[in-house]
Length: 223
Length: 285
Image 1 (cartoon, each protein chain N blue to C red):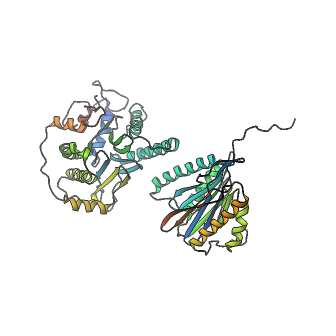
Image 2: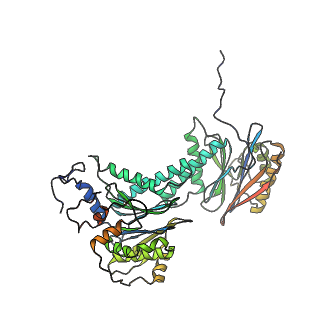
Image 3: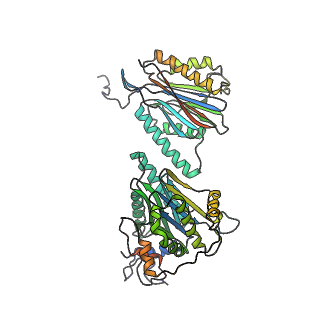
């Protein structure tokens, strides 16, 4: 008798795309605001980004219930860190914490595809990209989610910075200015929205720099 | 003063119905340096005296942030206070995680009191040797509580604990009726004056005291030294000596136990005036 398969899955994919680009003294993190299930749209107005610390912003696509649980876990751990160290976590520290938190559930993973963006201890932009179980790497730019296959090759081409696929590893922070990077992100999403059914509605852009944190929104196609 | 055969174990009652180990723990609170708290309708202020052991060392941390809406000032064994603060922080984090809302202050102090009570009923434990002034804001308003090593807790309009706290309490009793409607600045000024009372003549400066505030729209935070010194200078209270008005003992006990809408334990008045109330069990309800 063929192996029986479950008629119920603990996971669902709510779709959507996330992008982050690191600059010399800024970081841009963006995600669309569409939440879907199957061929339905659940809402056009759901934020996939979460500010974990002053200098670390997480964007995650995948199963949003798991994403929410993950964000809460990290926020609570960050509070404990602040009580113990009397300061906020740096982005590289948060990156390691996120990796450990994901691997902790190696055998019942968070169905979350994460991109962590922020400023490192020297004030330079940094982006960390993850898989569902915590494998991570610092890169100059990254995209995760349903539109990532459309966005990543475009960023590889545009940023003219060495792709993470090149050896030896090179510092991939883009020489673009902050406003150029924001425009690039808008272009990415405008394109991804055209062909990916799960990406669209509205784009939320979070810009982190020495002056603090800023948010921008842009309308995307709603079909 | 209390040397007798019933005071070795916390689980041994005295014939008079007292647990001496618990009472000794409350003595430890009286030995610690002073901490005071006062509240209005919208703000709660905590203050404490920070005396370093020597010029070479830093002073001990006596005020801890527990959450954005709760802070605590301790007097007594600061190590015990640190451990209890960590417990309180943990409880707040877990509650917010589960309920996505801040832990009501009244809930936290009950949990703290129950934790202290456990140590009064286990032969292998000892009571916590620290008194905690818990200041917090929640949906029902601004609150100030005092948690004893005995496991009792009381809500206060204003209170002081630790060495020479009686002087501060006397000052607070004179003024507490106005606190409810005080502005934030007046409340801090009263806190600084109360701290000064415990210094007995020494000049009040920001290097020997710490002040923390929590209020509506203002998360709990410790004021930095510069700000405190500015306030001391602005209020011009550094070296002034207010003539202390003589107060009868009974009035003190009633004043110290005064608070809003929560039943005050009259026996509480006794446990700060331990020296003047020989033979009265401090935990009597």
